Length: 344
Image (cartoon, rainbow, N blue to C red; front, side, top):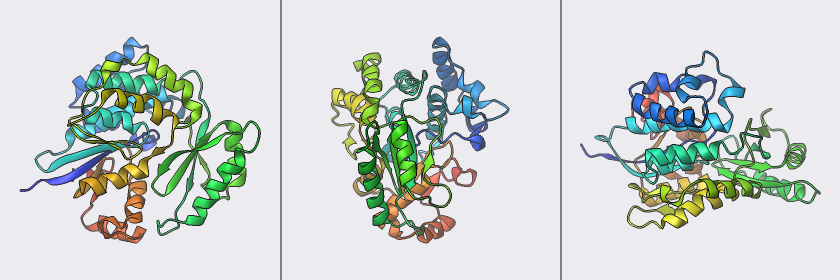
């Protein structure tokens, strides 16, 4: 049987929630050595083991959402899912990720070995353990059919411009996330944005709990700390093509490791992460038969589908096209969903 070509997408922060508690135990109890290596690393840094975090009786925002815990936990879940992909059935032609998922993608593609991966992910995830810098909020750019609403785009752009005219207020585009925009800024800027953006579906603008002002100039100090803390020799050429948050492809055949490190610890920390562009490049350059989204959770399937609809990929032009296609033979496989997991 001919293998199907797949692009694999790694998740970012905010995907390990109440429903995902116990994910490691449910799906990856056979990977004790891998999990133990992460726990040993965290023990050296006086941090709770991820195995214990995952085994808690009750999900806790205070315990499970801070970056110093969430990052390593999500990495372990996603990497475990990646290990479970059936390579007799699928040919992984490229790897990408959203936000923190870029660090995970580096590990999955082989640009970071397992020791380097937990070092980078845990270090960057723990940078704001002493206190968050700024925050993030989410707002849609699409209509009910998951088609681009250009008036909403103009509205968001106008709010950013208006907020930044106020003394002491900072607001930026943090992530282009399919049919959503993630905005980030300082508290004054976020409050202004919340006042200016019209309420939508009784959900938006939505503050993202325990999220800092990622991918904005407010993270300059975090970038500098990362560059100082993480050695240059941690990075190596990937085994699989990597697509970053600008839509650039890092190839196994040629990869400037200094540039890769600089992008990872500098540019993508302080500049907008264009996940939408990463997905566009993934499908247009690698023409996958399917896309596999790693768990935990399933927060990225909607944004990916919305980006594919924008480009009429797989002949999807609306939300209903996506729903109909997924009900028969899913092209977008979310490993965080029990019913789709077996397909991967």
